[in-house]
Amino acid sequence: MTDNALKIWHPFWQHGLNEPIFEIKETKDEFLITKDGNKIIDGISSWWVNTLGHNNPYIVQGVKKELELMQQIIFAGFVHKPALDVAKKLKKFLPDNFSHIFFSDSGSICVEVALKMAVGYYYNKFNKNKSKIVAMEHSYHGDTFGGMSSGAESVFNVPYKKMLFEVLRIPYPEENKEEKTIKAYEEILKKEAHNIGAIILEPLVLGSGGMLFYKPFVLNELYRLSKEYDVVFILDEVMTGFGRTGSMFAYEQSNIIPDIICLSKGLTGGTLPVAATVCNKEIYDAYLDKDKSKMFFHSSSYTANPVCMAAASYNLDLWEDKKPLDDVKRINNYYKTKLDKFKNARILGDIFAFEIDGKDNSYTSSIQPKLYDYFLKNNVLLRPLGNTVYVMPPYCIKKESLDKIFYLLENIPF
Image 1 (cartoon, helix red, strand yellow):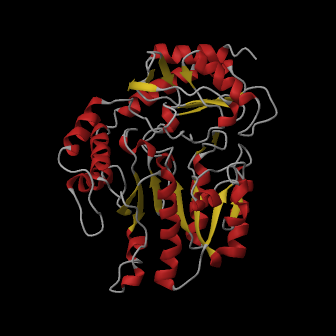
Image 2: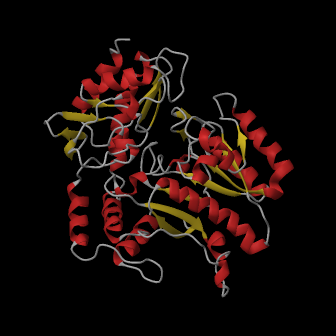
């Protein structure tokens, strides 16, 4: 970087520690290739977005074709083939209950959209101010204000605490303690259902909270209570969608269909930023009116950008026969051979997680930088969450790369 260039401020990065930042020249499959030619195994799918492998040739060709046709158009009052294709292709993977899709740019924003949809639904249709939200302890739903409010109170959002709206919390459903969570939700509903617009949950896995897993029947019970007390049921599948938990969407392992589902990350296979909030017809119809004031007031300049939509469309082609799930199963079977080598190890789909010794499991724990440095010095990208180490690679990862990752995990020197 030349002296007269602006200095880049990196996300989730403490520049005061003067840790090295690596310049990536190109990517391929599970590898990040530095300008010096080092091949780094991307063990976390570049923040969980890259499902099918870096530089997937089929998606790249589709993006190139679209780039020559159009780059950006306003999406209010206009539409284009890539967006129509995504809506049609995604519908093949979703039940009939889902009827409408709203595009945005990131996981955080599609969560904001979902929360606004739910609260506005009650306001438009019933003239009710049901604006309170229920969420789970240890959850994470993004870094915009709705996402921060819905997510757990943590170091991520302490400075903004007074700016966040009130959220009612239910405990994380630990194994054999699930009834405590279900009962807590029921008690909240008995007191506050008339004020509650939605419950939002990460299905089966709390990601940034420490890769905490819970059983599908919990979703069944929380959904049942939501319907009993007239609360919109939102699932944040930004991380869990597109195969991460072993099924196309995590909710498929339960017996429910949410009212609203939030999708991003794997929607384009990890190539370009796209998000989608998908809802049922009842939610949509609350905004359908001759009165313009009842429209859904949300947008961004790049909503449904044609090039990004092309990436999503071509990615969905590769999911047509759900063959990527075969690779998820292959990875999961590999993980099973490693389970007994780690304390507290747990696996679900493409995710392997465990805790190393140490009492501090906060995001700013002292052991996290040591682990991160150890892995990177050995050309593996893993970003532990406190003392929770997890692996979540692109589905194309080869056994040789998995062997290297787990050799390092089994030989952590501290």
